[in-house]
Amino acid sequence: MDNPGRHGSGGGFQGSAPLVSVSGNAVISKLLVVGHTDRVITPSEGLSVVGDRQPLEIREELGAVAEALRASINDRTSNTADRLQAVAAGLERIIAKLIVYANRGAPQVRAAARTVSELIDRLELMLPEASSLRVNLAMLHNEMGNYMGSLHEAERLLQREPYRSRYLMLAGTALLNMCDFPFAKAVFDTIVESAELTRPSTEHESELELLTAEQFRQLWIPHYQGKPVSTLRSAPDLIARARETSVRQEAGIIHRVARAQNDLATSHKDRDLLSRSLRNHRKAMRLVKGEYNFHMPMAEYYTLMALGFEGQARSWHETHELAAGLNDAAQAHICLLESRRLRRDGCYFAAVEQATRARDIWCMTLHLKGMVDALVSRAQAYFDIGTHRFLVQAAEDIAVASTIASAHDFDVGYEARLLRPRCAERLERKDELQIKVHVAALRSQVPQLFRPTESSVASVITAFREH
Image 1 (cartoon, rainbow, N blue to C red):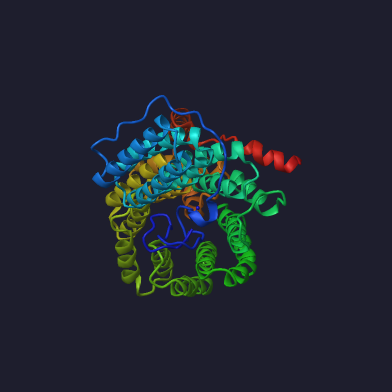
Image 2: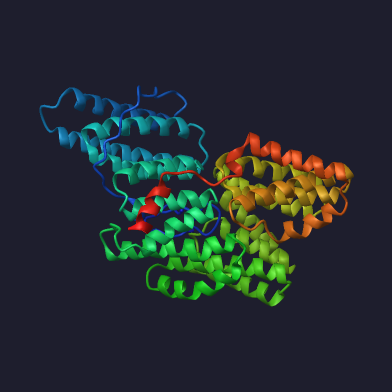
């Protein structure tokens, strides 16, 4: 889950005001999700070595925090609480820095995150309130593209305090990023509809949290499930609410409207609606001028391309400029963008290469909507190459994409629906059998791509519904 921020790979602006991200990966800011808890977690067997792979600054700070924690454990005679709280503050600062490193794709962040988690395990034994640091850790996992890790941290928090809305927001955001839309919607429904939740301390923060959950369940999820009309019908009321709350929230909603208009217009060949989509893309960017991330000009580029208007080059260059140096989550979007551009320009093999890169990244992070989009783009390039062998590969990609989308209840997309029958009419019986075997093998090898997420959050949601 967030801000349409200039430097975020998935929409996370490096600032204090929370806002829904404008595309790609959902992010929610610390303001929305920070909380306190008294849960004690059993420590791990041993602490990971703070190795040379980590940046010197982080390595030194982790070493200092580990030493301070060791000293507090061994000497409980004076000011132990103050010293432990100082350790917690040090870990907060380290996680904040690691989030920045993760955003830039630093390879050593994963090892540092494990060390931080183990330090939190130990700290919780003496300072139970330190479990709230798992909120920060969940945000770090999200920035790393480790959405399952973020979900696991939310699960640990909810085991102790199932009534805290901020922890449910963490869980829902992770599920949204993994494209388990029915499960995510159930979480956001609970956040919006339950009167029993413990919400943020201020009215403004509570409204931001509710507005974010409303956007996810009324705009994002219906759009991804192939119901852009539902998104467009729900948007005006949310825009009015956002206008009273946060300009960044307003920009994020208008951007989502523009994307839904683009998809609806493409499937209905409605140029007037495409033009309205373009105007909304530009309105959203004007609202947060200088602060939006690469998703906004990228979406504008796609609409300009559909219209055949000039200005595509400017949007393309701005997208690349804003995504430069960001992590794999950002680069997957750029690979998909390039795959589509290259195929349009007749560079089919290069298009296949870029789509494969995007697919591989999103397969690792379990961002399944992105993976499906990459498979469809690759299938189009295979189809355009035109040999029988590549036609079969195109049909395989469409079959896999359709199976994943169906398993997680989201729309495979207009282009895939068009291409599927065109592939089928040129397949032989043996090709159809080969495709079925291919899909079955993938189901066996990578089952998590084809089944809903299993999480203890489900029992929390069920308890609220039954209460």
